[in-house]
Length: 264
Length: 129
Image 1 (tube, rainbow over the protein chains, first blue to last red):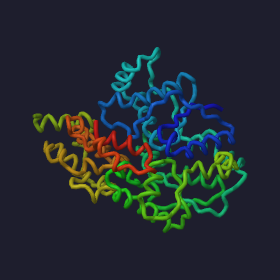
Image 2: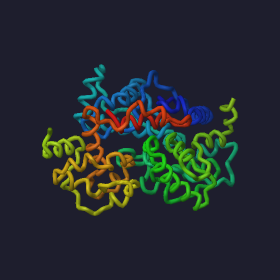
Image 3: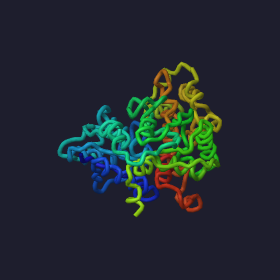
Image 4: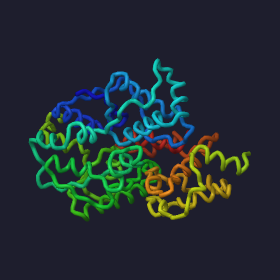
């Protein structure tokens, strides 16, 4: 199975490992991520204004490229996923945005939200299947107590993201079970890490990340997993907690026995 | 100079929010992770638009404290979307000349080597036009 893949700016620079572990794991699981050519940065933040058009075009280009190849579009970074999924929803359901964006795009056939956008975790759940993943695990992470950190961008608004139940999600816990570890459920798992506030107000981001990490630690987690480079940064860099935080793909690659391959 | 009425209309237009739908249950403020940092609280945003007191709203700290985490949007039982309202007020500010909240000149001293690009592009999109 071949998917179009949107890596995004951070996965090509500061979060290369998030990307590399995902590619190696995909190969081990028998699917291929074909990176979109000349993708443009999603902008990191979904433009909320109903009159924002130009800021949505980079997503439309990626979506249309996947459509032309007849492939589903896979994302990995939480921010890219959030932006592209929401723009796709606009293109499908908001006539004004669809018309105006297509005026810029000048495509032979207008884009109207035809592409299916899947986060890498959704590929594991809905295309590969967690049962199948479990069968492919050669190095189960036995005895590890892992807290899933969802953050905001993958879950909300639930009606558009359709990722999981936004208040009581379980996809990452099911993932943790599939790789042989034990999930730790804690109340702050879908709270905000502070996001972009970290640029100008480190202390605020630090306090918010502390709340999350102390909550996870209090419920017995040995480590956290995330899909978001900014969450990882805030928790590693701005929080006072020492709880280790990993990209979920690193643990996936470890469980599938392909981690060493990536390190080379 | 735009009248307050016009600014209120503009915020309603950009946000697509109907402030009359709010029933003041306070769930948005109860959910907001930035509540303590805000001078105008999420459940109050609608009142400023309805009272056409846009001057206070656009000068509020809350514009820059909202993280767009969408907790208020998710939990609002009336689908009012307070987060979209405050984001529209923010846009009314940054769309004006010289009203950026972040200048590229400030970036070098704010940088640290681990900072993901995602942080910079997000901040640029939130803090300036």
